[in-house]
Amino acid sequence: MEYVYAALILNESGEEINEDNLTDVLEAAGVDVEESRVKALVAALEDVDIDEAVDEAAAAPVAAGGAAAAPAEGGADEEAAEEEEAAEEEAAEEEAGGDDDDEDADGEGLGELFG
Image (cartoon, rainbow, N blue to C red; front, side, top):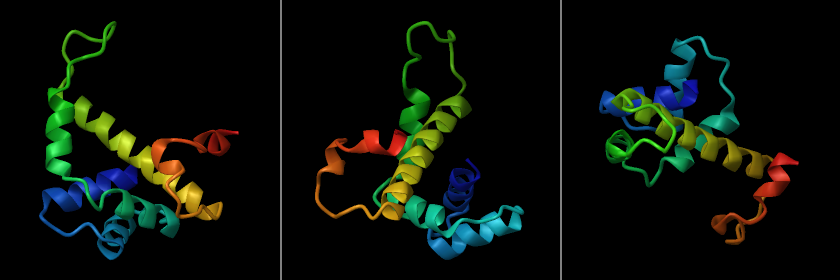
């Protein structure tokens, strides 16, 4: 989760979200940085407008059975968690020697990641 928080800090401060900046923030926070996770997160966020994603998550209705009102920060946390999960999946695929065809783009093959 700290990787996503570091990306949010960079975004909020107007800094570019790249491997060097993300690594610097994580190291400053005392995190033992995993290069593959940094690369995966940077790649996952490449085409994402973080401000828009946070706004959409904050405006999303609460699921049935949930709390009556969700604070804006809760929506941002959900979005951040989804982004981190996507980044971790991508990192796992890279480590497993994933190929470049579009098979995984439509969700196929993800079952192998979870056994």
